[in-house]
Length: 443
Image (tube, rainbow, N blue to C red):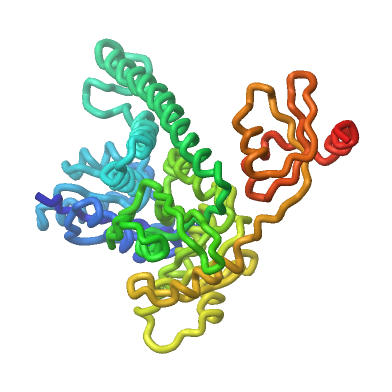
């Protein structure tokens, strides 16, 4: 049975409030997106309310008058949950639950719930649980009479305090256990990545706002069968498949989780390992729903998130998707300039496609082929510890070794290697200043 949800938003109108870049500037637009998130989580949205205030209310976020209105709406719609379009403090959530007498969630909790539903791999499930526990930890205080607030005086001692500290200790222990499990899982995934990289192939990662059509495009490009769904965050776990470009170069395509405005920082941190596929990519396909009225804003949020994970300088191709939903003939360059409002983040190229209809996919593959850097060969020097036989074997197999010398527990090698291989072996590379003396010695 679906839960009936009420949505509550807050629009700050005070003079001191200046929205930061990438922050939602329109409360109605943001709460519309919250509704889509709620539906993705399995709820039925009964009504949405937006309160306008010069500042957030410290006790209830939206103020006592709006809370009373929410209480009346709860009885009118038989609502079972109220979802707020902002992150609530522990005090605000506790006060609201006491007054409204129903479950109260904020935007972060809702996104965490969707992620928990969609995670399929062991790593994804661990990452979601870690984010949930980190979110819960500061909110333990006040969850029931037996878990009273820390402090001194009458009524603050006894079993309630013990219960609170026990719960905290258990959560800390679970967080540590999850982190250890994640390291093991990441180690296995790193091994899989190294196996893929044994035959150096360029990686092209699909990034973009959630529900922009990345998975549908990924399926078109690779012939894969990744779930493509209109629900937000339909794809959570990363998928990698290889494909052939028109020049007969083989590349790896990676489909990753979609971004969203106000994505909780803890989720960016928790899924940093999953986004390693994006970090390692030589080219990003920034997929945009060109038919969306909020396309420019969505693009700004994606650019901001890419900057957070340190890949905003990676070569990009802007993919204007869902062109079949735009009436008439749209000029690609004009549309791209309108969507990319920031002149500092112009892509290498822009291509219009309809992933659903298969239109423009061949042109996109051709543009990827033209844009993807060639695997240029250069002479360089590596220093391998004698225990690192694997990387040395990789260099012998896919590079051209010119000279080798063993000394001081290291194997120093001068070789000609393609750029993709140099990237894989970057941690063994010798700086240009030191390489001159080593080349002279090897020669």
